[in-house]
Image (cartoon, rainbow, N blue to C red; front, top):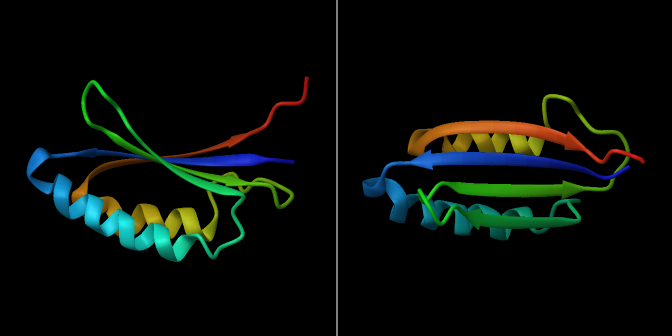
Length: 91
């Protein structure tokens, strides 16, 4: 089963550059983890940043993976964090 973690960060404009630098560093380290893909998105309307961790290693963890939880914790100093887990729905 594939599942997805979404970490959204509502960041103040004066912290954006520091956040982007931190995310770049973290993402290079995360690429060695067992995620299928890691993607970074920016909301074009309000500048909110979203990190998507796509997993395909079995059962989804309802509260998030250790990697996702750690990432959310590391980034909480930059703004408001929303961390959610999504499982692929079989039709």
